[in-house]
Length: 354
Ligand SMILES: NC(=O)c1ccc[n+]([C@@H]2O[C@H](COP(=O)([O-])OP(=O)(O)OC[C@H]3O[C@@H](n4cnc5c(N)ncnc54)[C@H](O)[C@@H]3O)[C@@H](O)[C@H]2O)c1
Ligand SMILES: [Zn+2]
Image 1 (cartoon, rainbow, N blue to C red):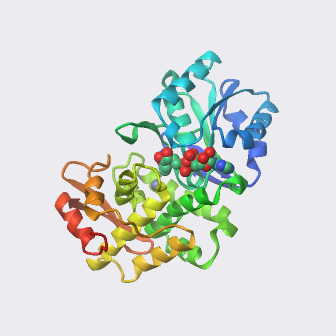
Image 2: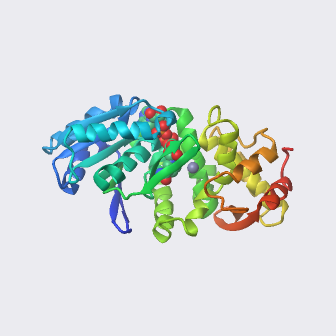
Image 3: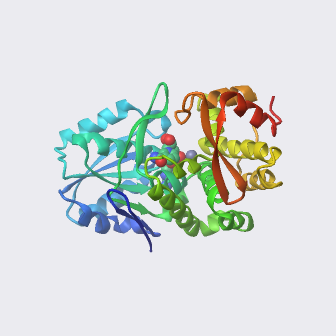
């Protein structure tokens, strides 16, 4: 088993181990102050793993309840949270009881937000089951939901009591969602680790996924520990995301996945910084080749103006300028402030879109 400690205002452990799902009760019970646990999960994940988690908790004498919502980003709304509150209240959950988030990033974000707000905050444990959730969303304490004006616009920072990662759960994840998570893995290599990037080039990620998850979690843990509330270094995690979010929006969030859009964003930004002489030549090509290796696209036909204009609607843009994340070479990243008019011409410099 691999163990990582996260030091924040509430410290917690991240445990990574194949088969940990079968023993999750042993790890969760000692963290509990009350006797009730609500498993929050979706209609895909609960039928596969809900029983295992429930039995393991019950073996420790925990009173287990479950709340299952329809799988997919479309569920990530305040109305779903409202149903969770009702279930928690109807089942007599008090501030001492616990929520277990069992699923991908949608589940973790929503269960975490319900935990952050129900009775002004109750404990929760993350059991991420998608690659994206294991390497990204379960670490860093961001929780929230989408509203009609945009994604993740409502939320809270709320630390889990623990994160339990079982790489075996990836066996049932579709190849499509595996690739989606790989875009974030590639991002970590780009911004912080040339060794990870080279390993992804050399080997097949699926064969060494336990080590990859560990490496990514360490990178994210270290970054968020130094900058919990996104004042500085945490922005580096947005590499590929400024343009990526805008591309997702141009597709109305259908027909392109987050990972696909982020991959394209990383390549566009790096083509631009290479043209501007900031980035080592050949870097964008290396990123493109790696994306292709993991079945991700590296370009898109959305007009450039749509992409750069859309970037200013992002919640991370402030006023007339925004911070973009650039890499000078693989494994080394920094931020640069660009005005609206500068963003277009900067990207245009390395761009084939019109
Ligand atoms: N909080 C954060 O810091 C953070 C960071 C990145 C992304 N996110 C959020 O995460 C969400 C995306 O996460 P996601 O891609 O995991 O989405 P998701 O939770 O919808 O999971 C993707 C799909 O895979 C299924 N699934 C998950 N695990 C499975 C398994 N082991 N076997 C079979 N099917 C499985 C789900 O049911 C779903 O259909 C977005 O809402 C995004 O905003 C949050
Ligand atoms: Zn992302």
